[in-house]
Length: 147
Image (cartoon, rainbow, N blue to C red; front, side):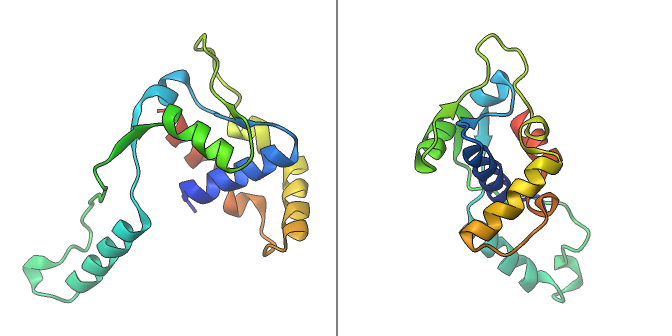
């Protein structure tokens, strides 16, 4: 599942369990670039609209059409990441100042050892048991955080 919130949450939980700060696993350019996200209420309204269009007049159908829905507000990871880290009780760790590559999500929290850690975190926190690969979309996070 390509869910940014869940992915970052799982990533952060694993880093915190390992005693790390919230390491930004992307480039300095991405950290400083403009980003936008869509709120859950906006997505819900979009889905309601889309559901209402199905089965309506032939000219109004949106089946097979690509579209985007965004709030229109922009920010930068450098503004969001420190707040997110503090909210999670972690220290924010920005990408290297010299522009060298940061460690990737896969390098930081991928692999069998982290999959076992995730199982133990689920047990400790009373979470539904899930496979790490099902809740940590590594390629998606890499793409979003390395634009």
